[in-house]
Image (cartoon, rainbow, N blue to C red; front, top):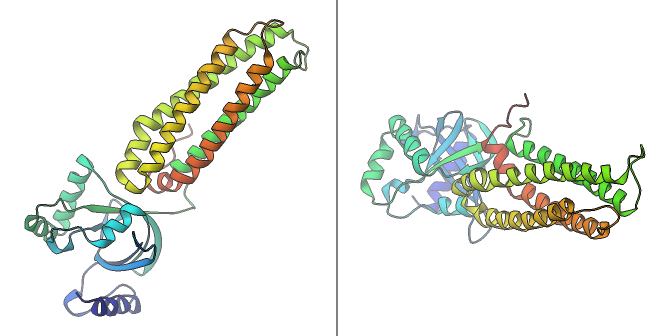
Length: 293
């Protein structure tokens, strides 16, 4: 298909609110706009369009050619796309299912559009299927929930720093509890905080992040960086927990404990900010927020 003919088809598609005549009459189609992997410029392509489980689906068949089409390479570099289908336009994250999820989805694609099975038979490459997860800011997703979790950790860490301030200043709490009681309170609080943070990061490293990296190859380098940040935070947590466990009022140095908490706060805030920039949109697009009760 020549570039000129392709451009005319897209113009006709838009003029007729997603409908084409001639050889394409009755087809379910979409104009997918990606970002060029090498140029960074918008790239438009007319593709067959399926709706499966409420999501748009496109197939990188290239009519059974032995190479992936250019638009597929684009979404591997940048999964943010614009979808025009059924008379509407929406933004989406283009996910690439792997493993069993891919096999199940490809079987459903072929059941609805057998021609894709014929294309697969023509080539030795595995034809990718791409799920277009609509970005809808009106619906709370897993990414929004992640931000709320981060806010809880921020508040807990602020409370720990306030307790460390009390010890560093050699004073009791506002209700004049003795300093030994404050030290024990901080031990309990620190253990609870560190345990919750460690579980949160382990859950991300073992379940959430691998799934995102599989579906969105463009996110893989950032996810690897996040995992490295988890290790830095874990080492700081261990150091702080040791200091808190060994703290003896009147003998231990509270300034050292306060300094380590400041280091943790700095590392954790930088980590949270980077994580929210890197994965919140993808999480919101692909997963609903967990129930609150």
